[in-house]
Image (tube, rainbow, N blue to C red):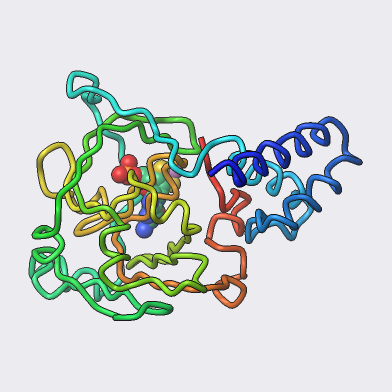
Length: 254
Ligand SMILES: Nc1nc2c(c(=O)[nH]1)N[C@H]1C(S)=C(S)[C@@H](COP(=O)(O)O)O[C@H]1N2
Ligand SMILES: [Mo]
């Protein structure tokens, strides 16, 4: 274990030395490139900045650093909602039949593509977390989320050694992706419950992603499909999620 640690120290030192000036960004970017730390939305004017944030987080924090977990007494009284449930006809049909016909396919670079119903997901080992979710618009809340670790499901289907990202699609136009460090992180859940109840429609029924270490927008609601891939270039505008199209970064670490 000493080799990767000392290498991380070295890269971190390199990054720290270059953070100070605009000229330094190029050097930081070069270091990030060399160690595969370039986020998919690094192309635009703000690209070098995004690269630095993502690379710095990845290097300064271990891949398994945990978001803070709270007590039940800390759970917020009011839980805000962002947006409306999908208007797509298909979603409405699924909702009307209480999601009995809903299944989530997991495909792409996996050994055993599969699809799961909510009951099948609920029979997998349940995990819960009481964590803080912050929206980029400034509001936040603490809630208890129940679900299955994404890593559990990924291990069931068998992720290819060449894979790099997990892409999630939703019944609205939203979509996003995680690198494998975040996809396999123990606090990254496929979530079907909130504060002891089934997930309500407005909070993402029947299944949403929960990514504890990133802003709320990474926790995609109304999941329709999960795809494992080695490249994000040909998906949407090629920047890893919908967010960069709206001026927000793909990596939303907090
Ligand atoms: N499919 C989908 N997922 C989504 C969104 C959305 O509009 N569609 N909004 C995101 C944003 S911006 C936030 S802050 C959180 C809010 O989660 P909540 O409505 O459960 O509070 O959901 C995220 N997940
Ligand atoms: Mo948000």
